[in-house]
Image 1 (cartoon, rainbow over the protein chains, first blue to last red):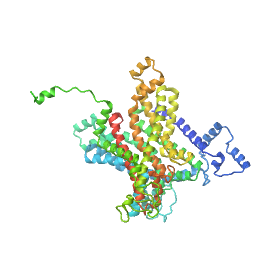
Image 2: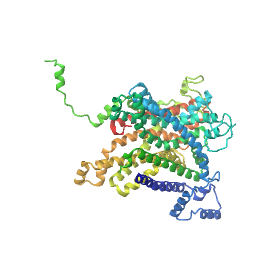
Image 3: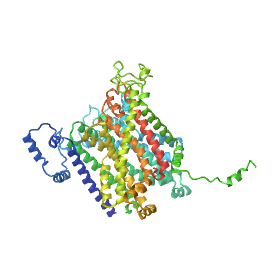
Image 4: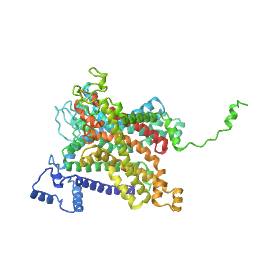
Length: 336
Length: 303
């Protein structure tokens, strides 16, 4: 086990260095004067230009610049945002809870609906329900979520006025950011109605962000269940006279879950990509909206740092899933 | 002796040659209703794209000054002249969507071609030569894969500058690792087979071995992946257009049309509804066909 752990972890190091190199290269590829790109000003006086060039170390050889960039990154120094003049890492950490909360609710929505739908579709293979689940999930998988979000706003916020259009909580509430998660903070505060306000703001964005994971989970659960239901031990369990609820709910589901859990873990990348679109539509103050705004404002340090942090996050979660998988399934652990 | 009893006929089975691979795929596809539906929609889409200038009632960029935000024909205030209504500067929505199909199919083809070519090249080299080359290429692919596709493409577009061509390049780059991994895996499994050894012994050079012998046997999973990424390419390019980073106005790209009409979401919902519906239908059609193709070509990939 230790050997498996060490190999997997050591494989991550070159990838991390590679991502750092990519982030480093990207800002060098931005067309225009390197100092102007980093300071965000045009027409800097030559003397100051030379001074800045030296201060930022841009007159050193590229490999030295890269090494000092890696050093900075490892110390948590990801540069200063050109617009807010705050460290990029601080910006990211302030906005991250909003994205995390949205993503958690989206995954919750996807699992709560996708898992039972997939199981029932597999058990009733070939039925109308099965066809409906497969049809709807393929549609969900093909959905342009930016349009889906607009349709939901149009129906539920504009026409029916059931849910708010944008933001995380009504303006009348002002909560101290304790955890940064609105639902938790509103429960911790004693403001009445704050929790339901936070929750109602979450409904539509979570549905939009959860749509593609929902489709993936439903399809994966169905096919994984179908495979397991054909196994001999299921027949044995049935022959022993166990109730069909027990056979499906305990014997089959448990083994069918392994690939599903992996797939859920691998949705982190999809979620971060989807968050960019979802947050833009719902004016959700998270990482995704921040990145899109950074592009519009030509805030390259923010973009560079944001990309590096998200990639590290995705990589970390994937590693975690990988290790978890090895823990659950010894066949993976001992494979060479 | 004209009517042979049924049992006797059954004992003398007619010998037929096994169907050709292409025919086998076609037979399996035909049995799949979803795949056929997808195929029909795709054929229609291509016809619409080819004959756009005949089918579209108006020019996609002509502005009718008297008809700003006119609703579709079946809604009160609409007219048959502008079947799906008009947008905020009086352009006919139906014509824009018809011309938009050209762009979407063009985007899909270019993105798939670029990523397929690069991916196959990298995967072939990796699986063929192994060793340091393989490690280097695969690590690079891991790096690209660890960044969410949409994020990587918006960062690339942010650097190259917004526009349709740059958006296509950006999206294509994010797909390369998928093809490279698939190609490498199939090349590696083919390399151990007897026919490869045989042609090596017969004196085939590396290039011939790679391109003429091994590659054709690796195509099945790549074709399936190509069909499926045709749909994601359209989706991702539309997303970039929606964020203002893809095709620029007045190009009738469906995602860009959505972004332009956001302001009118409440007052004129049709300008938002139809472009999105067009994206969904197209993407769904390619996914339906891709699923069918996967089941037909490569049962191992079935998920």
